[in-house]
Length: 423
Ligand SMILES: Cc1ncc(COP(=O)(O)O)c(C=O)c1O
Image (cartoon, rainbow, N blue to C red; front, side):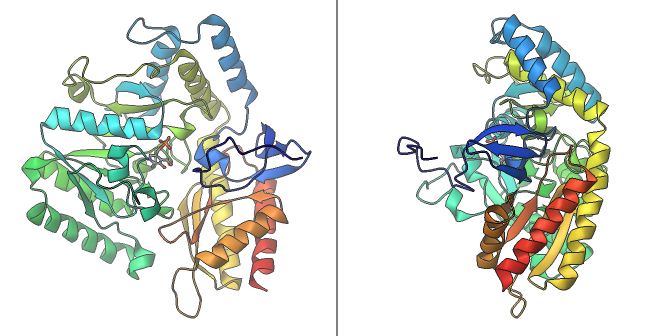
């Protein structure tokens, strides 16, 4: 079917040109009657699968009651119920919530809160970070130059520390952790003094930067350094949250406490809502009126998020992410033993990356990565995304409702695509 696409801005990087009209669970259906196994989850959003009936109903019911009960003007039941539902699933000390619309907007809110609370200006990010595309979050994003090229100069006060990326540095987890913590200490001695550093922000699993889990010891080290200097630790769980990694939030693996946690994507199964969680003590210092927004805390978004949390619990999707993630990691590790272009396979739960390299040189190979993804799409009807600083990692991020047979189907299709691309 031919469509006139000429009025749609071409700025969006395109993964496919499919025109989808319907989604159900792990599959999407195009207007010309094709179906695809969707392991993109709309970039990690539809954790409960496409158009889960219980979430659809919650949105429909809420739309019939009131769509936009603006939070400056009134409280509304979904807002109150969502804050309680979040309070049950977030770490106990994170008991106060602010809502906005996108991941970037929530990251911005976390930075504003950290600056306001500490009265300090600077932020430390890690190499390979992705925090969004607004001016502030672009300045905090170092996953690829494409996110910032021709937009400079960006807001200042952002300093970049190395991420403990064991495979890239050719080190083991302990050595790379010690290296990254030493370099961070150097930055605090040479670039941003602790007394002018408001916060450090990190994704517990580097997302756009290549699906690399941070070693727990590194997150513990960050917490220690922040405590020493009165710096806040912001954990960006936008991509890794809401059960994705086999825990409700990925930083729980490290047993650390965030001062502020950022949430979006999987929070409401596709309805645009995001938020930050912090302690009552920190939130109470955020001066009334210094932050807000027209749509944050929108009644339909809150209803969708509340229903999402309920479905994740009822259907044991956190547990399923851990089990199916194990199955996926085992399957990919087996493929790695037969396909030397798969240099590294890693991940937590259903947030798994496989990094493509040239086996002769060990260098990143974005060309073969692109070929495999194209074969998967065109011949196998398997939708995959890439990530990584050199665009040489395939990220596996299926809906958390995925079952054993569907993981096997994905692996089989991926193997076919690998064989076709390598010939
Ligand atoms: C870790 C992380 N933070 C922030 C964002 C920005 O979210 P949004 O695209 O909703 O603004 C993303 C988006 O991919 C992300 O992965």
